[in-house]
Length: 541
Image 1 (cartoon, helix red, strand yellow):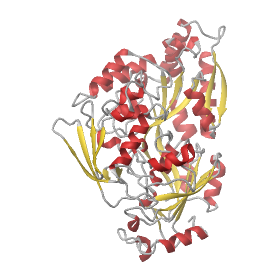
Image 2 (cartoon, rainbow, N blue to C red):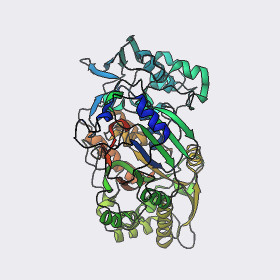
Image 3 (cartoon, rainbow, N blue to C red):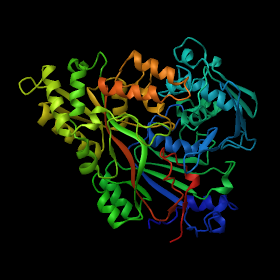
Image 4 (cartoon, one colour):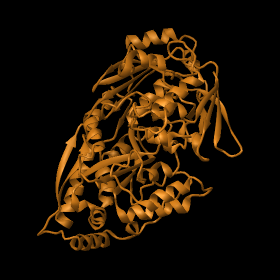
């Protein structure tokens, strides 16, 4: 299914890479017969925020960046660490100094070698205030020496705890031991970038014709708001062992239209529209897929000075959370395997079982009763209704959820909710500028450990969009980094944020999409969904 006539560019690419794994027409590991056309086409909901590793801040952009660039380490189909530019690493006895050994055959797409200095430049760039990286805080979260002071403008980027010992040896110094540090270097922010190309082209360096990258693919075409095309990088160190020749990402804002185009054979992968999974699973059991994801869908409440005064009352925030019947969202609206969320951290997180919070153990009738009582205590009800805006980015699924929750708040608490829909980049900017009352949000773990969620609740987090601040949360999360077993700290933080309610967890994601039966290699067992086109292949029908 979903086979396509190979574009001229893809045919030319196949000639260029004579001698690679697809030439035998038999997959070297599985023995499956390979399709002649090795083009993978998938749908994007929105134009990605960026394809600059130090600027990108969304999942879809990061998916593209992982094809164009390669970091020190990658993940396999189960989420385990495997070599990337680094073949291996060593850790000192005190576990605060990591040494990565880079392969000597990694090259940029212009044929120049990838060296340790390229990582030094990129990591310094990420923390440099002049870069204004939305993920600078992530480098601080990695506990890299001096990252905090550099981000604050108190020290120069050159003081960051990263050093090229020689061309192919990289040393990273941490301010404290971090057991999951190696997991964090699979994140796009840590990927190398070419200093000379950035110097030559400035903020235009990621455009086709300008960009130089070191991943398995290079950028062939980019039409903002329409499509992005990447083709195999002939200089990639492992090009011989990858099969897909061409990857096309098409921006389609409408879920139903995307599904129609999938069935027309124009897409190999697309999201399942809200509520349609049960029917599609029955009709297309080999193509409709659902599995747990390391992601949480939630609403954030603006607790900054710019936020509405009534929302600064914890009783109001708790009531809004309790009044949401999450099972209606997960079972009736989405119906794709998503689970009700009362904790911020999803159950798919490795090494941490989220606590059974009181709100999750009640019946919905009990939650509704307590919500009404809290609202009345705060001075709100039918005679004095609370009014605010609920912002979300363009998506039929987001709209359906917002409408349903708005109705729940209206019926149970008398709340008047005005829905505010925005295009993705406008939405990100609005949220960052605190131009919202309540806003839709979603977080997918940057690495598989509970802190990737709970650190967002600390005062200094770059993605603490509620501007929530709690000294105990800050202390517990800082202390957790020093503990062999931080479970008790994480559990307590979940309890605190459930009480303070700066965010409203709604559901934990499932990976719900249609995937052509002729697509092989998709990493369904990776809850982070860290996927690489170089691992995919098309099977002959």
